[in-house]
Image (cartoon, rainbow, N blue to C red; front, side, top):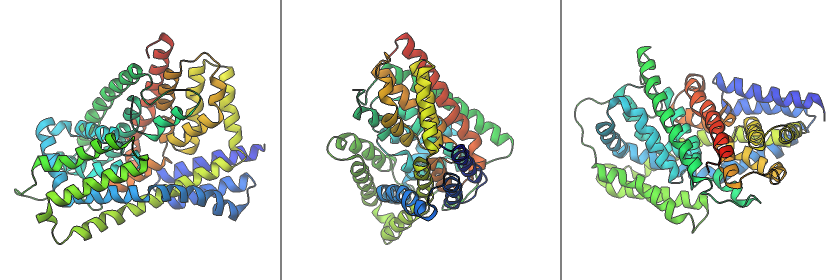
Length: 438
């Protein structure tokens, strides 16, 4: 194994992080960073792009293009019909202006528990969050951190969450199910929710004190003055509830992706039915605008996933796998496993990919070390969402694109909410596992 290959892999990751942080197009950044990994690892240059990179991008885009499109179309229909603003208005009355970020955390967590992937949840929640933040004049730089924290960190803590990440370990020799370690998971989620709510409330006040408020961007609706007619709250919130309920009842009857697509399409149809008078004559154009708006985010995210595929195919990547596996001989198995899965997730920029690689390559070595399977399951699911959210994280890039903010401006809030907090919750879970709170 060449040391140059290992160094090159690290340089490629650092390059992608720096370019993404500085706002360079993620697709271009992924191509440049992939070239560094390919050259330093003596991989076939053009065939690595045509095979590894293209396959990683193709697999992601092919699997998620309908979910991206339907979620974005549903969000556009919610926005244009006024349904999103109707929900936001009622949430304002309930939570109050200063609690707008807290309301967004709760709504996002509910959507995530309803089964909507973190990759696409921003399309559904952003139309609700935007008018709330606009009315409260809160900077949108907080949004990616809120969406990521609620849809990934907090959601993965909860037992029974309908995510692919939670399901991975149920297919292994660990012998657990999606509801593993319920007490540990609920305690971690409550602690994380309190931390997140306190952080976003304080951060919003600090940003306002600096003069940083809401800035209209992209397809945001311009601020309107005077009273305007909005659809009833019940008909506006019902599509969101339908998504959650359909995900719950359909998850045993069809695959995860089919389940999400069906739920989103049903919710979109409900929005059209309830708001036909408002949308009459522009249903197709609104749906098309929303669907097409997802393509940029899909391709940008696909580029980062292509880079992750190049990294996994590089000879230097084996060094990191060997290093992670070697930790089990030095530290407590819970500690070493948490570090190992974070290292792999950080390199690939995805919690799902990091946990999958861990399950395939390292899990077997932990089965005979006296671990509690349920505690280990919940710990790993929470631990993998720590270093995965470095600036080259595909989900983070998607959310910045949809929210119309820069990675540099928003990452100062993403880091404490989705890197530091999961690491803290991982330590908390390790302590609980050691004392038997499962």
